[in-house]
Amino acid sequence: MSLFGAQRVFAHGDVTPQPVDTTGLPPVGPDWLEKNPYRGNELATKIGASGFNQNCARCHGIEAESGGIAPDLRYLDKGEDGDAWFINRIRHGYTQNGITKMPAFEGTLSQEAMWAIRTYLDSRYQGN
Image 1 (cartoon, rainbow, N blue to C red):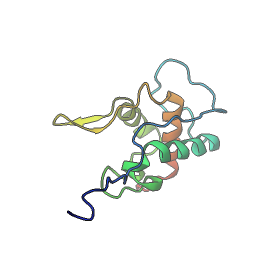
Image 2 (image 1 turned 180 degrees about the horizontal axis):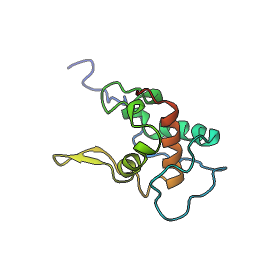
Image 3 (image 1 turned 90 degrees about the horizontal axis):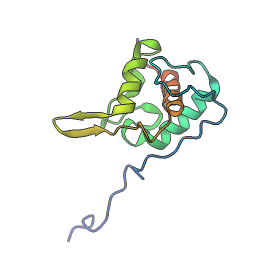
Image 4 (image 1 turned 30 degrees about the vertical axis):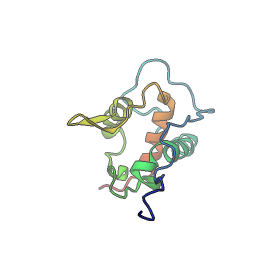
């Protein structure tokens, strides 16, 4: 028997979505926004970093620097140019050829948490 055959690998940790505490951020209301209401908000960046680490880093890499499992999110379009794409993808997920590549987070994370994560990602931007 292989030395590794009897062990389970938990390389990505707990894959159950973790709640994100958005205390201190103004609520955005029930309608889904297409632009980030927290852009430049220091508290949102901090909350978004925590939310990203708890829910996204296992696939997209620590500090959004991907190791190849999923896209490197430091290269998303920054600012309003990438907001609509981001919120659509995090809400609805992504499926390719019948395989879920990214789960949908709508109903799991609040809109405030999603925009806080977006704010954090803008702070990590590495594009042109």
